[in-house]
Length: 380
Ligand SMILES: [Zn+2]
Image (cartoon, rainbow, N blue to C red; front, side, top):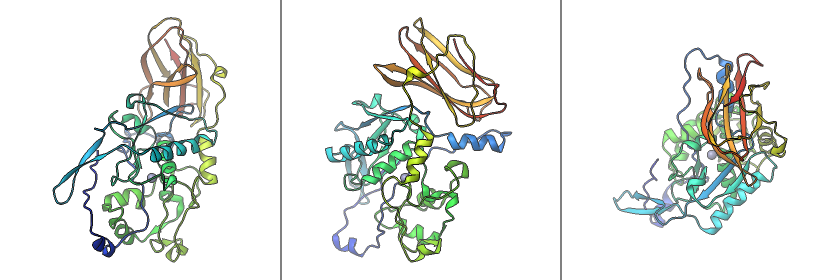
């Protein structure tokens, strides 16, 4: 994990003299970009990139706030002194994050959110480490983060700035920064941007500024072909950092605040509301079920084992899929395991124990299929 920047308490006088930039920015965490083997068609890479960090719809994202006195990091100041900075947040800060989850949930999307009391149960683990910036990993990348580590941090008060909590949760849902949308047409005054972000309160390196602002996303990583400067995933910018559109030479770019109409329509398109799981068709043991799906589409199937033992689940045929198994525990679907074969010459495969009397839901999302209708799923 990145260390917190060295912090020194400046005297008020020196603070007044230091050039400052008005906005504090989220510093989204990236994992290594995916590297594909040779011979993948452009269509296939595009299909994988557009869905690669998204959740299968219906996932319940469990979240947890670090709560032990030992949860935190020791940071070293420029004068060599060290201090321990806690990851724990106040009740007001935690309440602001809960409200931000509720704002996404209130849209009626197919994802669910649930606070859990231990880090072991949690997929999203939230810290409030002051001075460490506000950030989250993007989408399913959080599954690769160790249980004792944060997947999201708030480096300043989200009780005073609730949109930052909505924004970081947006990353966890799989959304990237909207100001990096290649369809924005933004031309940066790059040196001014680097200088503004190098100043307090962000104090970013050029690499960090490039990664979070200057770098354009691939067209496959954004929804649609338009730019939404009111998105909650868009930073505000002071006047003069953007050369084009030219109006931002003299006026700031200030998103409207909160979720924009397009944020709402995109998240509902990606994670549409789901009916009760009793409506999902049952996949019988040893039954190979053909998948008549288009790229990006998902199927949900019920599985009811009649014996308790290890089972195998796999896809058949030439397709890029992600499969995720959930167990119905008192009406809540708990994540049990998943596999993603996208971009590889193999099939998605899970081996895990299922219990007699329990009901499971297998969700399968298709990225891409060579030949429509020649893909199937099977468990045995
Ligand atoms: Zn961000």
